[in-house]
Image (cartoon, rainbow, N blue to C red; front, side):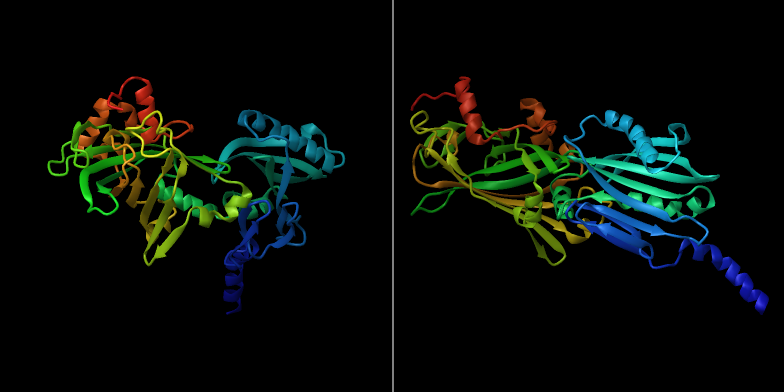
Length: 450
């Protein structure tokens, strides 16, 4: 019996030394310096929250050195733009730091075992594996990871006695490094919004919709005008302060009964036939980069509502600014010198999809209601009333190729550049009204009759 007990203890000894089956993981969050990581919950911890310093340590036995994982933050004058140059300075900075800390150490004693580039969340980092003599035959084995972010460099340093002791904690070191993230407050909220609207991996996504347009004039019944069909094609570009959402939008006007794409349209409110100008807006970008202060309020900037097993991201925009089509210059095509509208939209997703971290783009349903001034091609002048647009659609799994063939072919024939999302961020955004003015200035629109 005694021999069986001893045998069982011998089997358990490696696990006890490594801490397997121990207290699990704990999470370290520094809100001031916006980083988080996970570490073994039974390791000893030191923290200076103001400076961002954090250290987790363990000691396998009294004869060994302490194993340490440390986070320190350096400030730099300007953000890192040339990562190759950043990599080139890493080894020399590490050597200089070790020489300053270790009496008698010379540069040749620091052996760089490997240097590589790695991704930690959205950030690119440099990893340096190294070793150096501490005293006598004792050597330390280390890992240094440098993460540049704006005007900060996060330094993660792992140290343990080279050989058997390092091998016992190597998995813990790797897990702590892999868990490290520089994240703003509400970063997950923003990421989920991007997963809904686009794709975290930067791939193109398409929202397709169908709808109808109505005329609403005070004191009169509604006017059924035409149907609409269109899409937006979008890509999200990650930035250290959030994302740039790059998109283009197409909306075609169609006959309500036949579904044909209109070239001309009979206006029941004027009794005249009008040449139709379809919507090709490029770009329709969004700058979703925020300061630390705005990240605190991100759930209000990008609101969502929980609806049981579903979540709705919703926007209520009320643009109000000078109309690019002034009444004096475009009296027949402009309702007012002030552009005033309403754009209410919803993106509906399943909660289960957002809870799956492997889905970088989640299926979504899209609905909208827009209240516009009369469109310029309608030639309504300053007549009272509004155009009401309603639509509903979804994100297409196959992107542009999944659009209905008639719509896809029309775009490829008329404006093939709208088969792709923008490659770079630009402003100002295009609108129906700014595009009309541009076409008029280029002589592409008959302005006679004003």
